[in-house]
Length: 446
Image (tube, rainbow, N blue to C red; front, top):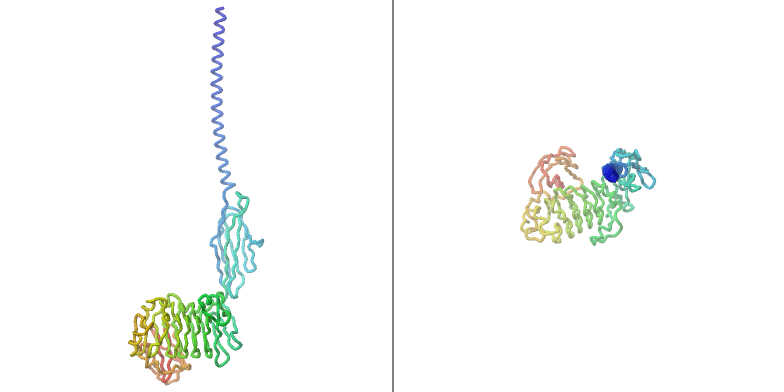
């Protein structure tokens, strides 16, 4: 019995030892497997993350620059596509092909340089434009992303003729507009526009044929030839005219005739003009210029705001009336103080009258000049213009006495004409009077 009991106790100890060994082995097994499982899960996460970055990231597509502008002659330019995906030109199935330009290449992957060629010159009323669309594949959304570039080709200078009446034409060639008539005297027609109507200005007929911005932006110089008696209402409203030549045949300058122009030179009104209508030169001078306005004594009527809106560039106003002409309150200004920086030049002996007269008294400075040099009748046979500091005088006769005065009456040249044309150096800007015996003419030197 004692032996059996001892054997049972030994067997139980063996069992207990075996159980502990099994438990330890199991625990070790689980711990090893858990560690392996953790490693596998971490590896899976890393792989998924990498795959997402490489295969399913967000696609990008952009162009630089976003606009190409060609001149009227055409040419070749390039732009850059920056992308991380496949792309192609896409435009209603045309894939970037237009009838007036060539695009190469039409498709690609990732970054690329695109060449745009405009092979033909272009002359028309206004520039032509098109927008090229580029699309790239977007794997993340199984769709496309888009970008675009604007292509512009400007026009060559226009060479166009319009018939304003059966006998009056307006010709635009290489930036110079020339208005002429085949009869002895004829007024320009009056015009209208939606823009002018917004200012409550009423006109007789339709807009001028050159009112389209694609045409009027081509203006550089306006020449109105003799026999034209009236510059029509709204005729050159918002036209980009840098200078204008008004002949001695013109009697009336109509409403808003030069409103909103881009004049860069002084305004010389010939002594044939009697009426300068309302807003005729309203905001007509381009910013940055410094100009003078010369008004002859032939003018008897000036409309409201005829020269207003130019105060920032208005330097001098020269008048010839011995008695101040009554004019509207806002002839030269929009607000009080607009003409404080401008100088009013008046005939000798009239300063006190102008200093007391409404509107004229608002000028910051009033000075007198000697009018004796301007009393002669201006003649169409005598012409003068200034260029690069040289005064060009034509219509002379050899042996005639020739004098040039400043607007203040100071003698700047005195000599004898040796030929039909004389060249006289002038170093200062301003308004000068050229006198030859009983003929004279004013000229502006800018």
